[in-house]
Length: 124
Image (tube, rainbow, N blue to C red; front, side):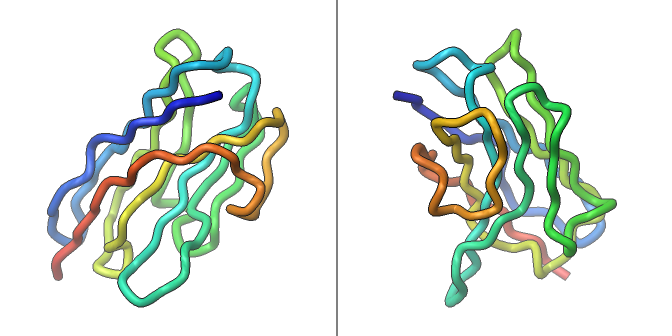
């Protein structure tokens, strides 16, 4: 079992930056892949970025490439999402997720553990 807790959301203006954190507990932190997903009002949940067990493998959805950076710190059992140059279309609830395997997956259905979510609101 893995327990996840997000933090770092908030209300910002377009062009600002935020860093989301996801603190993990339970299983050995380096044993599983993790990711960030988001859901905007009236829209389906979508992948934002995922990272493999070692941190060397990452994937970003096209809309955040060059602006967001996913990382993980094994010493702190924490995953991060650095979000720069935020846009109004980034407004959503952001969820941290982990799966029972070390390799990444692009589908939210392959992630077994989820945090409660943190709201990110970007105004124009």
